[in-house]
Length: 358
Image 1 (cartoon, rainbow, N blue to C red):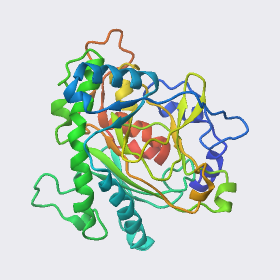
Image 2: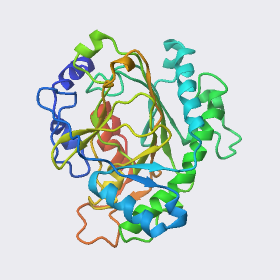
Image 3: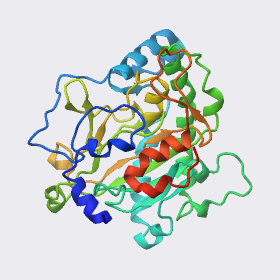
Image 4: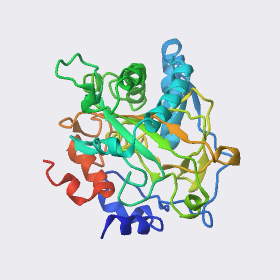
């Protein structure tokens, strides 16, 4: 089937049609696109806000509050994390500038290709996946794309179409890197594992830092049936997502199969656990379905929506295994690259993981 046919079909598809690609248990059933006739919204459930200052002031309380929130729904909001909100304001402006000062032909020189586990590079609008026409342009930058480790062979132009953007976004990457170990240590402690069990794996680890540019919505786009970003789960340990100035993020509550509109204070961080984490936690921390929808406020329809999530991975040859202290493991050990690409083949085609070793 051609990609265009797959995308047209994807507007009508249920997630369970692609269940054979999944590497963790996912029993929830939902439409990839929004389906207003059948969907309901949960206006009572509130995703918990956790004060990051507690990590230093009252760590047991931080561990308990974070763990309970993630075990309940796989999402939490992190406040007082130490990153200046002005940096996030600047980032939104920089991303708009980034996409507006490069022409599509220039961007296509950096079209996304798999490097290890991750598809790195540029995704034109409606091409984020082959199964759904997402109304977003995206650009994924992995660790290799940043001059973080004083590598003399690093060339900015290998990854970035224009000079000057890498140094700016490197600031955000470095700020978020400081949060990785405290967050992971807290999750592991809640699970009863050694808090430092992943310290070595996550020191200078790989990540996917994604620039998302959702253009202004037209009536034709709204009527097309495709959404800004399809319902999906993240394929990582966890995602660090600064809250956006244009809302639209929705989270699926598996307990009642209703959607939760999430619009925290600008500057807070939205944290969610992904497939890697569900695997090693033996399903205690779920990889929760979420999507991006048009804003409720009609005044925001004419504004582009910007986001810049940072997905935290482990390197390709690392092994994902259920934490040894957890009883009755549901999953066998697996190489991270095999795990990752087996899932993402649903988005990029069955040959995407054909050359990946077990």
